[in-house]
Amino acid sequence: MLWMVAGGMQGCAEDNAVLEIDFEVPRATSSEAQFLQVQVRRGEEFPFPNVWVGSDPSFELAEGTNQIQLSVVASALSELVHIKLRFCANESCSVTGGAEIAGELWFALERPMYLGERTFWGPDSSTEFPPRGLPTEAIQVDRCSIEGCLTGDAPTSYCRLDGRHFCE
Image (tube, rainbow, N blue to C red; front, side, top):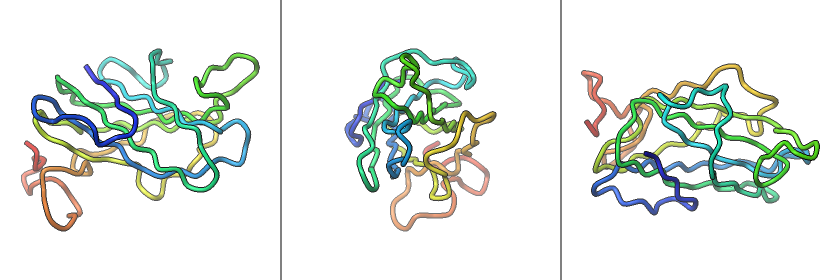
């Protein structure tokens, strides 16, 4: 099971796995993208083209750059975590009353969480915000790109030479 805590940096990693999501997004110039909804699900159970129902955090996008932070806490691990970033006209991202989803970004994170550990991820600086329309495929994020279990300078990879993540 996955739980999200808006605001980030709040989950306890002692008996759980914690993924801290942290990134910046500018406010969209169109009226259709005034909110950002973040949906995180177990990839094995929630394919991207499907509509995901649930209570997901939304962030109102203010003028300038917005810092988005949230913690994902899991008591059981998933080999694949799917993340949807939905840019919407209203906080609930509902499509009632003629409102539309301005765009979505899909990310498929390979093994981003490890029991008893805290890991970190955010879309890289080349990510286009807000996107236009719905994607046809997800942006694949290799587990070696998930930060965690090292101290000191940030390496170019978070995996050992044999391909195992430093958290394994």
